[in-house]
Length: 229
Image (cartoon, rainbow, N blue to C red; front, top):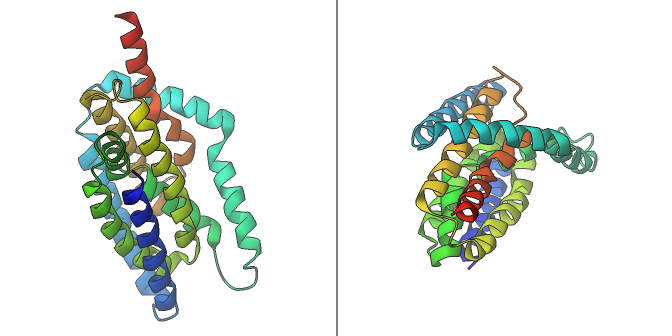
């Protein structure tokens, strides 16, 4: 059941190792331009997924509720603290672990392929989407880690936990996870990806991690609908 997620985990580690080896050979001017270009690609991916949402009102409500819950827990701060703790171990080595860890974790976790791929893996045992995502994440890891360092590789742990939990939970929620629920979850995740792109371009400082609970609100909405029938 977790084969697709494990392959994804390994692909990010391998890609990051390659990127770290290339890090010293990429001038800052070039790496900055590449990061800005990647940010534009991230925004494009987010927009293409967000427009597929079928229930605009539910998406808005999910963002509001998810943001409220996320701020209560302060997921963004927890992720940064974790990244900062690891960063202390690399003090004096010119490594910005926290930024790479948080950015890569969010980018690799909240996308449509992460959500839909994990659900298909759990519901049908189909890992095709996660295998394709593994290739994309592996390539992205090379580029990101060449500029953001080892924090990108550590994001593989986030992917393993996040996708693994969704995959395992999917089999237990088979009746609830109808196509409309999956579509709305994907649309919300894509909106968060747009936020990541804006942050990468330093246009905004959106606490994307604190909006993560919004992705799962459509599941609870469907549970309520089922109980009302």
